[in-house]
Image (tube, rainbow, N blue to C red; front, top):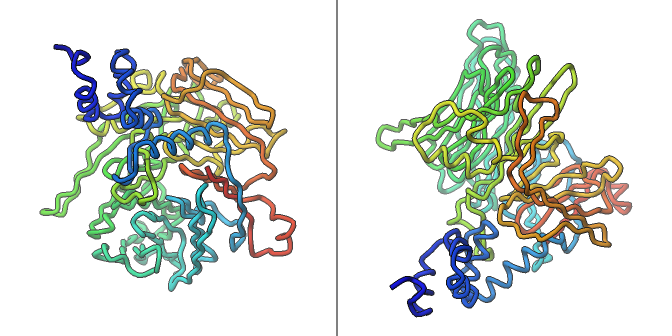
Length: 511
């Protein structure tokens, strides 16, 4: 007896055991199964979860009918960019991009190194803002946070004079976001590492560049030391709970690093005409306290024309959070497979500089991370037809959450509009449209070739993307996005705030 010959009640029980991807497949291959799924609110909810690239986080007591209604309403709001707008005042002027943070509905800013401000932002169903402002007992250079774990980590600014021959220590402070106390789960709430003097005493050993990232229990600090020459970029890792740390250092070809999971990263490496993305995993042995790093794949980017200079300038990835810590008010959350990574590229040909963004599904990188090492992988075997390359400038205006990317206007004649690029392959839009309120939508789903005159061979853009554009009344110096809101920090203060030089304006667009 086949599956479709069973009673519908039994088929329903069987289908409940499947994941969302399998539910989607069932609706595509069998009309009988399609009908069973359409008749069940629970199965329909699982189907819509898969189409949205989300996993269920709702409380078990929440009816599936309510979950489905909220999920569909949320999707429609994003499809039409229908938001509820509110404004707020943020203490302090705009300084540097790394002074901001926006994760899990919490906006934070570092003020003059000694003051830290956080704001729990409103949603479509909530209108209250909860501010917290506290002083720090040390000068902070930058920070990273995870509100779902009540966690913030500060990199302390080393204010000592630089030295040619003296060793210097760098500190990271692991604190609770809510109170500023040492985090109770951190064995060592102050993590330190030493920067040795330059080997030939000809170079300074102060930090010239730094960036810190967080993925659940692992911290990554990427830094360069002044005048370090051939020593390259350093990558310091810690498990903030155990205090165990390890260093990847001295690779001049490694120029950038970002997490793709709590146990895997992607390094960008330099190349004269073809840089690459290196997927690596690491495993910690608590008995030996040793960490083993495994290089899984070296994914080459398309080869540029001869005589060019081609570099990866940044890799932006969405915040990596543990689904176990999702707030109880949330009904869905994105799995790591649904993330989109933004690889910023700089390509110079005949003295003409070009800035490009390569959009890479995280599922591609995770596939290499979870399988045995494969070594060198040419572009045609991993990226051709599976990614999307767009010529656009790398600015602080790029921000991503799950499969969505927000950026400011690409049109200099209309600088106040915003664009939402949605790379969800299941996004269902029947046709292009333009509405009377200025909202425009356009889909790019057909594989197309582009060379831009920059590459030896055509680059095939096979990754579908749905672009939604809406004009705004203000222009923004910084944009942030999560699943419930857009945050825009204004370039100019509102009229009523024009005399307040110690504040800046921000708009909250809640969905």
